[in-house]
Image (cartoon, rainbow, N blue to C red; front, side, top):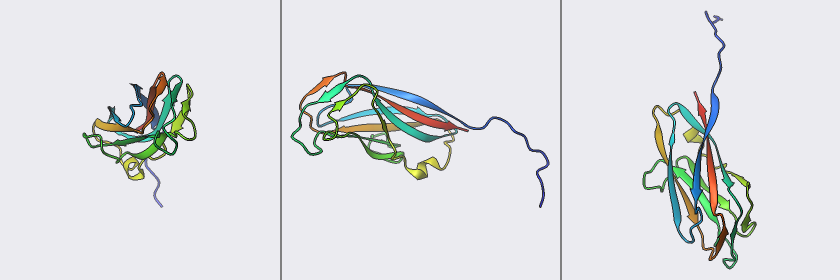
Length: 151
């Protein structure tokens, strides 16, 4: 067995995040599109959504009609799910009042996307797909925090 001729210890990779702040994130029966840049030589490590201020959705008649979901991909038409497949970020039946500071872990990151670090800055495209909540009160703001592992 051969030993390495020279082994150096130095700081390793680090995780840093970017924030995408969205006002009027819930648009009844519509979509809200956004984009952000994934830095060169990174992988997407985590995605969290935090509600910024109290938002309340009025009764949409039960069921999942008032839900909202988040996807993130590489398609510039905002339809992709290569980075994160659909994750419900608003579960209308469970909690139509979205408290200030509530955090949702978007644990639907596609494992294959985490496999190789990007070789250049890459634009990623996100979409929030909203259901049918007839009345929205409060701030209607959220923040999306994307954690990138930098190599």
